[in-house]
Image (cartoon, rainbow, N blue to C red; front, side, top):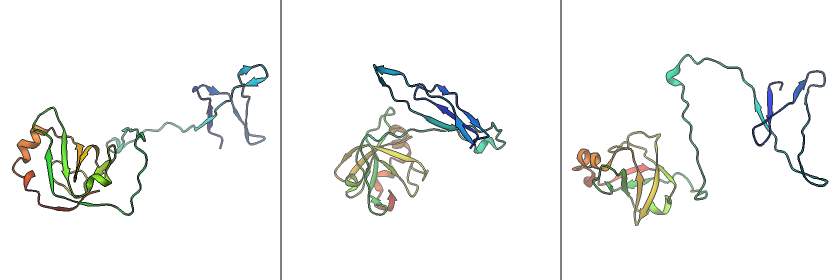
Length: 173
């Protein structure tokens, strides 16, 4: 590969060059002295240089980025746990809040604080099957998620219907 660039851990470029005769990269790494007769370590980061390009279909191009931090550990479950939701309700009717309670039997045992849930089917404001919602609270047979619709608007839009949720099979996983 003749199109690699090298950096140290501070992001400084390292002056390596590709020797076409020997078909390898060559250069020097200077190790800073830590104390007498000892030297610090060096980290080496390798990236591939790619030519610039113009993307003609800009509606399909996204620069959306995200970061995921593992603060709660990993949880592995056998199969895809699905739940029959019995009720979805806002925590309160305030326009400054976006939190909803999702009720299903033993749902809090599978979805701990900090995990994410996704809806298989559309219900109320939860219409995008690719959107995940963060679990921010739990109680017996319920989890609290943060949604995109404020609680006041949710109450005004779905107020007569959210209490009538009898059972939505395989709705959440």
